[in-house]
Image (cartoon, rainbow, N blue to C red; front, side):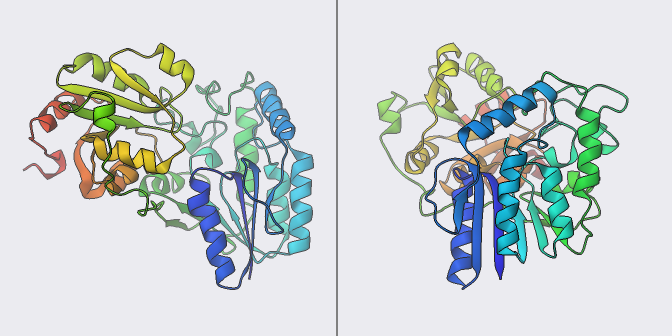
Length: 379
């Protein structure tokens, strides 16, 4: 079997999901290929980077100007399709297509004309919106019918950012036409959570079967890992409330941690946030122990283990990898009820809170007193 995977990046979760799959397929005797656009990874005849830094930047600039994310990069896409012509794959497995590197019109026209089966793993909601990757925070439901048909898009300032709002409806209609070209017997979708699967079933992709495959955590790394983290930062006797993200934003809940730090007793509690940029570290409240992103998974496991509780205040996660990682390290979590993070937490959820986070502060205080509970199990 000839199996091709396509993704925007080579780093992060791609190593534990995409390249792990690649190695497994090769070990089974299959002809496996991985193509990506951004990030450094070893290359050979079966693993290849298809876009240069300048090509990605050009696509990003064009998208910023015209708002047509996913409809540039014709040269890069032609290069990829030439490779696919030579490979003649049996299966093409799509991952992140948003990333300033591919022309989805060219790609899906090729897929529709070819004989291959298509698997598409969705990691966010971009596939069925006219612009944004998430819409819960904006309380927008235009994606269910047609984005920007009656009201303007409220999120053109979010990734993939653009100065142009006129393309949103065109994007939606074009993606609806292209992403439904393949018949249901030739393409199925994968999501990492029931939360995202439920949204897909309300979108124009509803005719396709959806399989839920939760992201996996490397338990050889993410496991209870004692360290001197508490001693290093003078937190020996404090109740540590932890927040972790690869990239912090308002949607991720950064300001929720700032407010929490201001409301909790600094003598008893420590709010630790990992993954901040240098600019965010300079600007954030001194009540927060602000730490940059760590590239060491082992170091991150030590931080998870040192914490008393991980809080993920976002209602827009498609899975919540930090929740699963904390759980593997033996640390309980507090998540938003009904979110994908609540799915990932399972019985490691010490408590769930409503989306408005109105009960977050008293919940943390109760947990620090040892009064752990989950409102789902109340009589």
